[in-house]
Length: 154
Image (cartoon, rainbow, N blue to C red):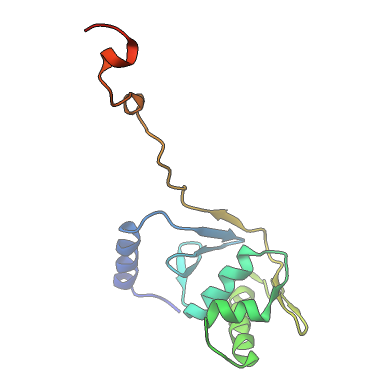
């Protein structure tokens, strides 16, 4: 499915006004976890927000089993749903991976337990942590008058 250029331009304007975001890169794909958009190269792929939430959790826990309960809580927080809803969303992810990268087996089913992402390695770029470290040595000077700090008479 193609996105009209004006919608794509609106998205990029929105991104430029946001702080640095968390990006998960795997194979030919890139998940902007904060904007909740999956890209194949530079082309956005239209997926529902629940599908994106599931993908994000699976990528963040790559190689480890993720329980059905954890996945349901990620995509439907606080709601009680049937397990078939989860199955439908996982099938949508598998379809995207199969059609665009031959990755039908990237999400493994663990019968009666959950799922596991076993596709290409995931590299995650996270925003830098905010710190309160002074950037200038001048900020390290005491608040007192210099004559009291250094014992000299000025």
